Image 1 (cartoon, rainbow, N blue to C red):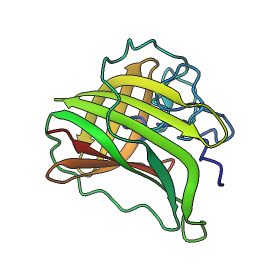
Image 2: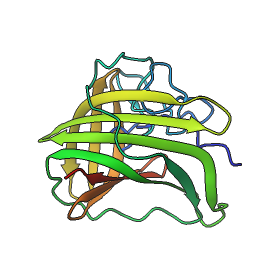
Image 3: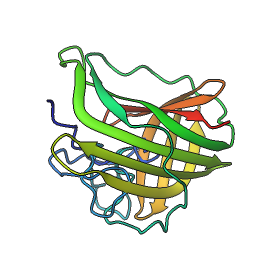
Length: 201
């Protein structure tokens, strides 16, 4: 099986517009303190915040649920590698509510090898105005699952957005996003990882 992409999630909120990436830094799933998630693990250059991937939520240590009380919803979703470039988002207005994860992809360009990456995710987000909360659990075929909880703000700019996390640590995700009637998809502009969430009834 393919190894997951190792880059700090700069998710769903910080994957939107961040600093330099560190691809060799191991990370847990999207809700643990010293996570080793397959997202974008990157340290920002010289300042307080860093660029992270959607999967790691900018977390550096388990927060014990302090960032959000959001329950993990939905089922376990296998991440798929796509041998193409990620599509550009179409933007839109996100309706307040809780959304469960339904699709995870990583775009590897034309030379990439498509198929399962060996990494699975389960999780939910809650959006209330500009407030953004996320809980992600990820696991690889070679190890135990990891949970990462994070919270911050979501700021849209046309078809792109910035997820600025303040808990458990300060980080940013630079993303492009698309909204449909009941779903929202975020694609990290740095890690090329895409996470689609469907709103709960």
